[in-house]
Amino acid sequence: MPEIKLTSEELKYMSLFQDITGVTARDCIIDDRNNRIILLINPESMGVAIGKNGLNVRKLEKLINKSVEIVGYQENLEDLVKNLMSPARVKTIKVVQSNSKKTVYITVEPQDKGIAIGKNGRNVERAKLILKRYLDIDSVVVV
Image 1: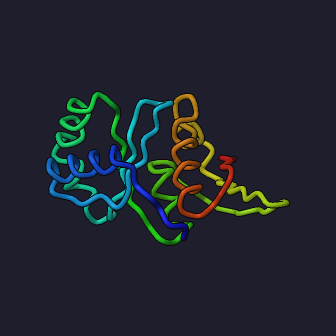
Image 2 (image 1 turned 180 degrees about the horizontal axis):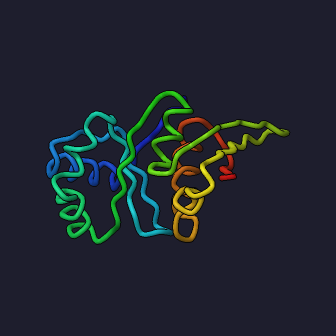
């Protein structure tokens, strides 16, 4: 796993997240293109982090004026991809290396393909950002 250096802005968001939720974030990715922050946390803390009826997420979104997405981090590629694609049901995950590029092909249930991709490809983009950061995967394809 590559060494991840957090910016002061990412640290600020992580601290604010912890103040609001009581949950420590493992990582924070700022996605300016989609006006959101993505927080990676221990999957067991997901319910506490989100809060009753999404209260904690809404509170944080209002404070920072960005969308907030929370992902349960896993060391294992398969489990991480399943968390990234949730609630879409992942059938298979295949990593293909050609030249120096790694691509992960994620097969989901046909009725879940739209959910997996997300509006304007937001979910695929989120998966790509996280998988690049942690596992040096260059592209993500949902099939």
